[in-house]
Length: 282
Image (cartoon, rainbow, N blue to C red; front, side, top):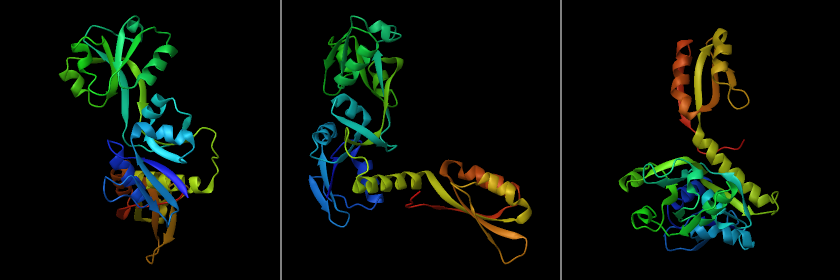
C-alpha cells in the first residue's frame, strides 16, 4: 500500500485535499483525522504538519508527500521534488526599512530574521555574504521594529503586511515556491503505484488548464480552423450531414478559450462551445 503524507493545515491543506479528491482518492471528512486508508486505490494518507513532511519522507517511512518547495529546501532533508502542483505559489524575498538596503551585498555584517533559516543561510553562503541569521516562528515583520534584526526574509504575496510594517522588499527573489510532490532522494522512480499517483495528479493539472472545444466549420475553412485549435496531437474532424461542413473537437488552453472562439467565429465557424474536462490521461 502506498503511504502518502498530506498537509494537515495551512494554505497547502485545502488545495491538496481538493486535488487528491479530483484525482479519485478518498480524503478525510474531519480535520482531526490524522490517518485514513483508501482501500480501493491501495493508498494510506497521513495528515502531518507541512514542515515535517520532508523529514518523514526522507526517512523512508512514507513513500511520497505533498509540501511546499520552500519547506522542502528549508528542511535540508534527504528528499527531492518530483512534480510541481501549481498551487500555493509564493515568492521568498528580503525586506527592510526604506533606504536600508538595495541588494544582497548590503547585508554584509547585518542580522536577518526569518522563519526559514535553512533557505536564508544557504542563499547567503551561495552569494558569499557573511551575515547573521535569527530564527523566528512567524510575524517576522516586527523583528526590525523591536531591534532583533535589520533585515527580514519572508514569503511575499501582495506585500501589504510589509508595507503596513513600514518595510519594502529589495534585491532579487531568494526563491519561488509552490506545492510539490516529493520523494526520498534516490527512491525507485518507476514504482508502479507512485507512477499511477503522479499520472492522476498530472491529469488533474491538465484538466484544470484545458477545456474541450467543439465547433462546426466549412471544409474550405478547415485548415485555418485547425491552425487555431491544433489540440495536443491533432483535432478530431468528423463530416456533418450537410455536405461541405465538418465538426471539429480539440483541447485548447482555458485562458485562451474566449479569444479562440472569437477567431473561429471570424473565419465562419459556428456552434462553438466549450466544456470542462474533469479528468484525463495524456
